[in-house]
Length: 497
Image 1 (cartoon, rainbow, N blue to C red):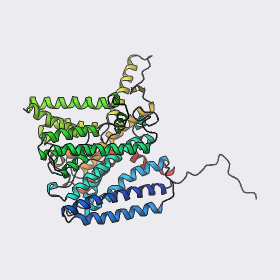
Image 2 (cartoon, rainbow, N blue to C red):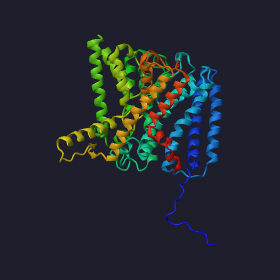
Image 3 (cartoon, rainbow, N blue to C red):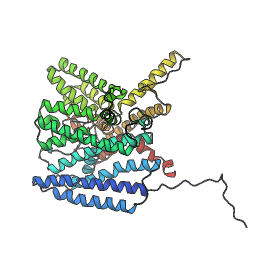
Image 4 (cartoon, one colour):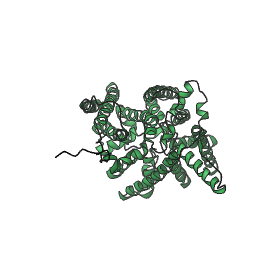
């Protein structure tokens, strides 16, 4: 009997997801992270602190595991499919904190692995929430490792926003595709070259911030650590009192300036360096970001002077710094703004959701999404008044594609929905509603401090139950990966192909 041949219309089984390229790339990233542990080990060794063996052990474990992963999957090529790119992006931000937590768990601070993972996730996602008290007396190597995590997370965020998320069409990020966007076109021919150029710029800005802080009176160690976490808009400090510990107006203004610098699109800096000095000003997102900061700062300063009897200098110094810190997602504090009254609680809760610009180290919902939302809403309202008219929303002079509008609207709905679900889940762990809702918001917006006495600017996350810390770690991951990069993998169809 002649065997029956398959016809063209026969159902073809979906191709299995090849994990080898993902494993190879993940192994390289883990190995690079492990190599970075040599820096805090050296810092502890030179300072005479006995904590250096924890970093050496963690380095050996991390590099060994990462090297084995890479060797086991070598020769699989460097091209990834869309599904592989989704999975690698999510796994990188889950696995790297797991290894980054090892030296924290081995340290003399006696952190549980839950606390260590929370701290590492907060560092790499540049959230800035901490479970560590007594930072003033903490080992210098551990403080440097926290700063390095945020610095590495910051550059990873910029590269991801420029090269990965636009390809994945996440949350309207396709607006910034290199082949069509004003913010990316004709700078450099390939994403890899742009990433190298951004790294050079990132190093330069970190060095400049360090120099400014040294000239303002900080010692070299504090200057380097704060410069790294300022450019990364991360917010990890070497002091329990954050930047407020130094009580130095010049330091406040330097940090404020570089928080803004870190929250602007890095690709525009490259354009400016390559002969287009007005690139930042011509970009609609950058102009709106600066305008929002100016408006919020002016309003806050006026309120502090009129209602709380601050002097004009005090109002500007404390008002501008803390507004910029929360809006950019940095999370530094120079004073307990929670003590300013109920108005400040509402204001800072809303401000923490705004965020900075796409393509920066900043976080939150991002300015461009609000622009797309209001432009689309404006066109819809004009169409109601003039039914026969044709109204097209534009961004940087170009029409906003319908798929971008849909992505942005969907992102906003999912962001708020996930935040509410996370807040209710946190409340089930025993947290009060202020802590639960502000914790959910600050985790998903990757800001750092929440509101209230427990996790506000004068507190930290140390006393929260372990279940709440794992939930908040997941919230940080969701916020940093723009939600859909994680949520899409929860769909069965993703794994079926």
